[in-house]
Length: 46
Image (cartoon, rainbow, N blue to C red; front, side):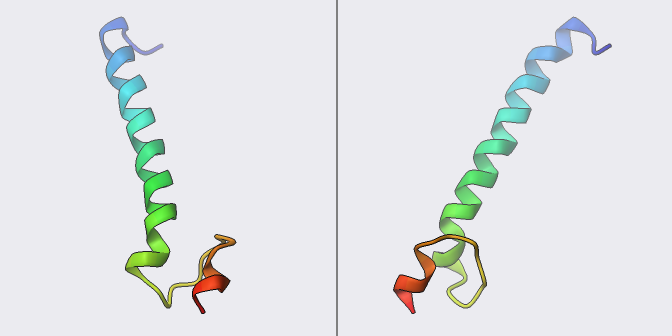
């Protein structure tokens, strides 16, 4: 098991990674307009 003192650090690190992935998916089409993405709003920019 993970030591008690590392559980909080692991918890916040996990949510930070999830938040970073969500932001990357949202901002991806703006930074890379030609990059194929699964976002439904990308065909509107074409």
